[in-house]
Length: 96
Image 1 (cartoon, helix red, strand yellow):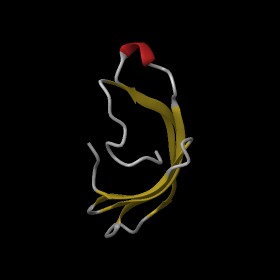
Image 2: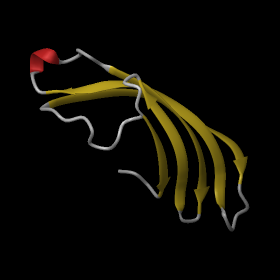
Image 3: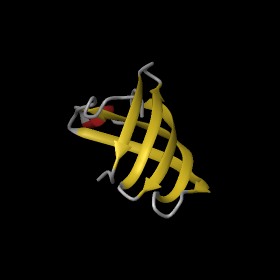
């Protein structure tokens, strides 16, 4: 969270993420199903050399608001990383 997609590159990469998603409400049946809030706490990095693994880990977190619509899940989230970078994410549909 907080970084752009594919911003980190290397031969080795790792990430640990813990998240929580909580349903706070229900939508009318014609619109969708539920309304959600949540967040994550993460750490990870990418390295070129195997001996550098676990050095210079980046820590980050995010907060999100989402609705499960008839078109698929719609999420707005904000993430911030220990590097000082932040990012706003808007997603419609499933992520793979």
